[in-house]
Every structure is written in C-alpha cells, then in structure tokens.
Image (cartoon, rainbow, N blue to C red; front, top):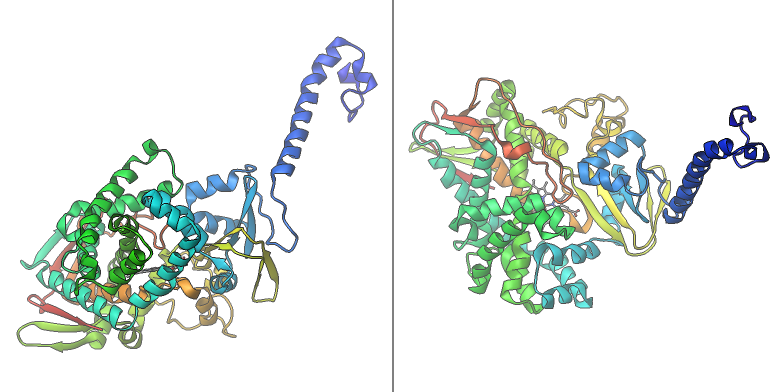
Length: 542
Ligand code: HEM
C-alpha cells in the first residue's frame, strides 16, 4: 500500500506496483512530477542564455511573461519597483525567449546614454510606421537602408540645429510674448475660477507653444478638438506602437485621425516654410521632403513633433504649481525671491518686466530653482530605450563591468535614478523644496543627499547625443507662468481650503514626465489678482 511505502521512495518502484489501488494513487503524482520536469525543461530551453559577464538575471515570479505583465501594468514605475526590490544597479530581465537589459544605477545610465553603440534608431524605425500609419512608400523608405540615413539626419542634424542659438531664441520670444498676452488678460475682472487646473495649463501652454512652433497658421489654434486629440493620442501611444487590433485602440485611432487631418493642410500649403514658422518645424519638414516623403506623410509623421514640445512641459508646470502653492510659507519665501531677483522694470502704467531665462533664475532665485529641480526629480520617469548595435561594456563607478550583447534592447530608467535613497537620502520619497540648496548632511560630501551624489543621480533631460534640446525653451515658459502667478495672484484651491493635489497617473514609458491621474479631474484653482498688482501687463525677457 502506498501508505506503507518508505517515505521518499520514488513512485513507480517495485513496492508501489503491488495493487491496482497503489497504481491509481501514484499515477497523479507521477503525472504531476512529469509535468513539472517537462515544464522546467521547456523553461530551460526557452529561457535566454545569459553570459556571466552580462548583468545579473532577475527572474520574474511568473516565468516567461512576468516582466511583460509588470511593464504593462506599472509601465515606467516597474523599473523603480524592481530596483527597490532587488537593490541591483543593472539587470537582465528575461521576457518570453528574449531579454531586455534594465539599467538603474545613475552612473551606468550616464555611461549608457553617452555610449555610441547604444542606438535609438532601431526602436524609432520599428515603432514609427505602426504609430503614424504613413503610406507603404514611406514605411518602406523608413525601414529600409535609406531610413537610417533619414533618421540620423532628423535626430542629429534637424533637431539640434533647430533648437539652438537664434532659432531657440526666436521660439522662446514668440512663446513668451503669447504667454504675456494671455496672462495679462487673465482674471481681468479681479478673479477667475478654473474648474480643472490641468486643462487650464494645457490650454495656456499649447496656445503659446503652438504659435511659436507653427507660426500664425498654428493648427492647434484652429480648433480645441485638435489639442484634445493630441493628449488622447498620447494616452494611447503605447497601444498604437504595439500595433494592437483596431477595436482595442479605438480612441487612439480617432485621435490620430483628428491630429493628422489638422496637420495635413498645414504641410500641403507649405506653411512650414513661412517666415514666422519655427526652424523646428521647417528644418524637419525640409529634411523629410529631401528624403522623398510626400506632404501628407510629412503631416502623418510630424504629428510626433508637438509631443516633444508639449507632453512634458505641461505636466511639469502643473506639478511645480501644485508643489509651490500647496505650501503657503514657501509661496511667501518665493514671492520675495522673485520680486527681488527677477523683476527688472515696473512702469507707472502697469508694465512689469520679468526675467525668465535659466541663467537669471539660477543666479538670483536659488530656492525657486531648487523647487524646479525637485519637481523634475519627483516627476520625471523617463525610460530611454536603445539597442546595443554591437557587444558593449558598461563600467560602473567601482570599475565593475557589464557586457551588453549586440541586438539586445537596453532600457535606462531615469525614474529609478531619481528614486534611490543611496543617492538622495532617507527622504527620497518626499518633496523637499530646498533639497538642492540645503546644507549637506554628509560631512565628507559624498554620501546620500550630498550635492555630489545628487548631481550624479539627477538626469531629468537624459544625456549624450539625445540630451533634451528643448529644456531651456521649456524652462522659460514655465518660469514665466510660475513667477507671474507668484507675484500677481493669490492662488487657492477651488473647493474648500485644503489643497487636495491629484495623484500620479500610470507613468508611461512613452513620455518623460508623469501626468496627474484622471486628467486632473476635480482639481480646480481660484486666482485673485494681488493687491498692488491688479492691472499689470506682463513682459518676459530671457
Ligand atoms: C520639462 C520639459 C521636458 C522634459 C522633462 C524633457 C525630457 C526629455 C528627455 C529625458 C529626453 C531624452 C530622451 C531619450 O533619452 O531618449 C528628451 C529628448 C528630446 N526632447 Fe525634451 N523634455 C522637455 C521639454 C522639451 C521641449 C519643450 C522640447 C521641444 C521644444 C523638447 C524636445 C525634445 C526632443 C526633440 C528630444 C529628442 C532628442 C533626440 O533624441 O536627439 N523637449 N527630452
């Protein structure tokens, strides 16, 4: 009988074959063990091989698909979760029969972003046709050998050249003039209630940026439906890039159609060549035309351009305003700093000139700059995705080397850099307005929270050749709005007296800055013109 068999005797041995009852009792056990063994064999065969020189393997709880499910559910936050649970600087994440390298340590991220063997081109080429639905002619062109050349021209020539020097100066001046006009007219009767602060800021920044980027023919100025489409598309970009069946991405398809239909007449009429259009639009479109793209496909492809200009500035400004105005004492300190540091002229007829450029704020308003950096630290979750074009070695700060095999995808998770107490100290999960200017806790100037450690781990704009070229433009827009609200307005929550700031939405792997949950629904603000600042006309200078 089975019950008399020696513990540990293997099923199927002689003692177990005595009666039919024994056979019936052990058969399920045998099958179960066989299933487990076969399962392990299959897993072993399917699991990607990992060289000991590669980053350490972090296996998911659910074999094969665990990391895929984790990334789908938590998106960019999954990297923070994994880094915190494993404590590792870098890892190999097995997914189905393949693998992805996840880089979490700031020094390794910096090394990866600088490394020329890690390229964004394969990723761009892979997702662009699915996301933009360009014609087959253009898709073939982009994915063929000419596509590499065109992508390089766009990324390494058109973008950097259009966002520097006189080009960015002009872009900034136009956007700042548009903001000045909107904010000078805002709450003209003395006060204004804004039921959804997120949507209000979205509108404010979209109209100023749209005008600066596209010129007077700005497609976003023609219909607010176009602006809505941009953000609906943003929310669906991941699904579109995965090329999921149409019924699962209805909202994405609709938003894409609205956006592309709005951009097509702009490019067909060659408004990108208008004198008042920015070089950002002009140089990219010119490059694409030279590459053989028809105008309609330029419009399809260029629906990605406003994402770069808007998708991160609007949420960052939203969090900066929430972080500041929900702290009355901080508001008082910042008001003094801004009035003393940034106001350069105040005329009798009510014109106030404010500085909004990076150098001025850095030099004259250290607390405001610290709040800005702390907001970036807390809300940038960027995952920079590259492919290793050849076997590549990354070296950490202790000289330890990790081999990245050619052809493997590398995800560098800046959100993980910004969330490690090893660099930021025990209060890493809190918003500390003065974090970047407070006295160093660590006496030798190197430990958690020291300026050296924080400098290494602060990477909100990426690095290497893809370092964000729009950061100074975004900064001036945000500073103009924040300084104006500080000086010119009393800002209160619309409902009650307590600030109930929305939580974070799922942190997308597509963009860099976290958005508020549910489009900031239910979070309104009331603005009242401050005594002595009632009839101000604002002017901004860099
Ligand atoms: C607070 C606002 C912003 C943040 C936090 C931000 C962040 C970033 C980050 C992290 C990257 C690197 C992406 C990577 O490594 O793959 C990037 C790239 C880029 N950003 Fe920004 N950005 C902001 C505003 C802007 C603005 C306003 C513009 C345009 C006017 C812009 C244009 C770009 C472009 C074109 C790239 C791609 C550069 C390349 O791949 O070579 N960004 N941004």
